[in-house]
Length: 67
Image (tube, rainbow, N blue to C red):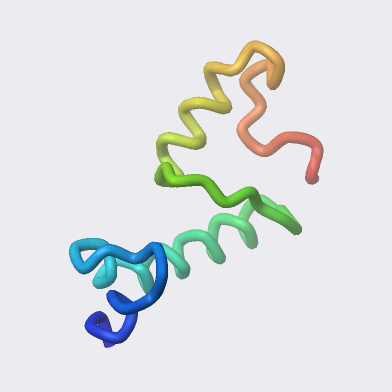
């Protein structure tokens, strides 16, 4: 229940309804890219992909060497 998740440390009352959906998106993204690990950050997946795409050290590779 969203009210229970809102009591978790680091989860805002506004963000708690999206927590389960975010977990499903993260799992599906990891399965689709065959990624075995991930790095937690305060930004959303789309911002992380954009930052990785713009990073000159990644040469635009969105997945990295995890494949």
